[in-house]
Length: 85
Picture 1 (cartoon, rainbow, N blue to C red):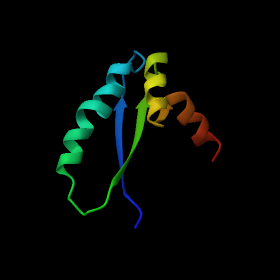
Picture 2: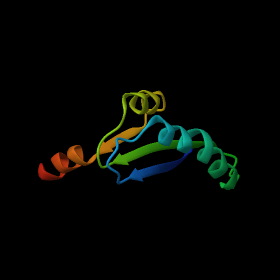
Picture 3: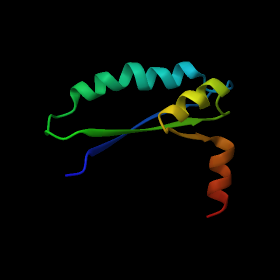
Picture 4: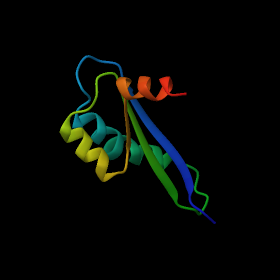
């Protein structure tokens, strides 16, 4: 049976780019708490991450997100994607 999947997201609407701290907090601090609250089904949970930012991400944030294959979406990229549809 395939693992169960969960998408965890964080969105920031601020003037500064999202820092590594925001990425680390969701992945390292919040995820274990969420995992402990998930039902024990006898299956593994596959966790996916997505981060949304008004103004983008610092290089350090991008690097850490890349380690976890997290999706990063900024407002400019979102506008571009939506205008193509």
